Amino acid sequence: MQFIVDQQAQFWASVQKHDEQMAKHDEKIAKNSEQIATLTDLIGRLAQAEIRLAEQMQGHEARLASLETKTTQFLERMDRFIQGLEGNGHKSQ
Image 1 (cartoon, helix red, strand yellow):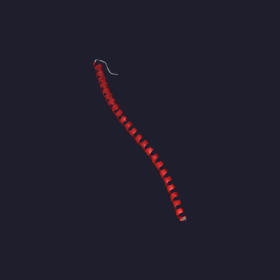
Image 2 (tube, helix red, strand yellow):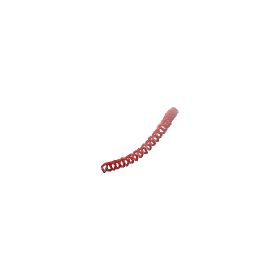
Image 3 (cartoon, helix red, strand yellow):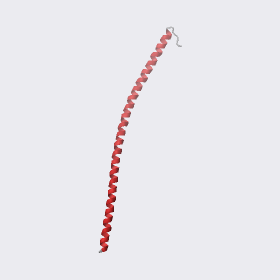
Image 4 (spheres, one colour):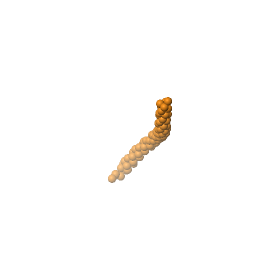
C-alpha cells in the first residue's frame, strides 16, 4: 500500500512540475506574441513610410525636370541675348 501512495505522490509532484513548466512556456508564448505584433506594426509603418518616400521622390523628380527645362530655356535666351549684343557692335569680354 505504501508503494501506491509513494507512486501517487511522485505522479502528482511530476504533474505539478509539468504545470509549472507549461505556465512558463505560456508566458514566453504570450511575450513572443506581443513582440510579433509589435514587429508586424513596425513593418507596416515602415512600408507606409517607404510608399510616402517614393511618392515624394516622384514629385521631386518632376520638379527637377521642370527646373532643368527652365534652366535650358534661360541659357538659350541668354545666348540669344549675348549674340544680339554682339551683332549690335558690342563685343563680349
